[in-house]
Image (cartoon, rainbow, N blue to C red; front, side):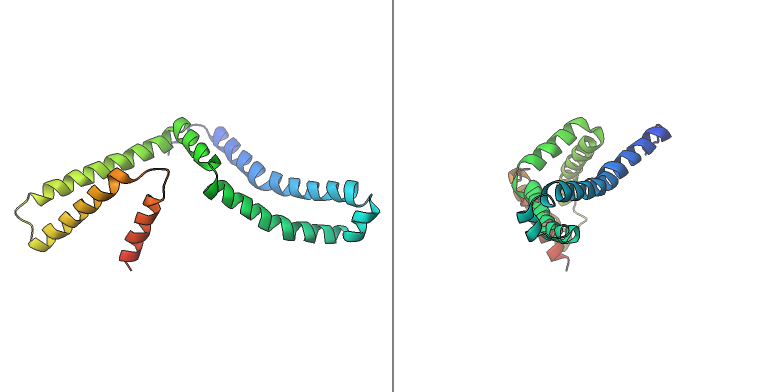
Length: 164
């Protein structure tokens, strides 16, 4: 990768560190503190349920972390939000777009190489059978796969399982 501007790269790393780590932790501490001392501590009913700040933190963390994990799972696996984010990222990020296009070109090129290899007479019968098997697998798999289904993941799992 070419470093276009060291200041821009440092600025990017700073923003990532700030927004992903520091601001997240700071916001969590701030939210816990503010909600406890402005809401719970002022109302006897709530104060009887959560008598100390430590109790409040433990209760909130024990409920909040699993809840946020479920929400994160839903975001990535069950909603269209992540799909939209990924689509926008590919539209606006030339590196991601290039990677996607390159992988598709490589796939087509490999298929053509397999096609040419099947016509070579220098291959053994076993090699021809293996190539023919790969060709049929690609012919069957590629046309019906979509970005909206899990066929790529299932294919990767089959490939991984077959190498064990």
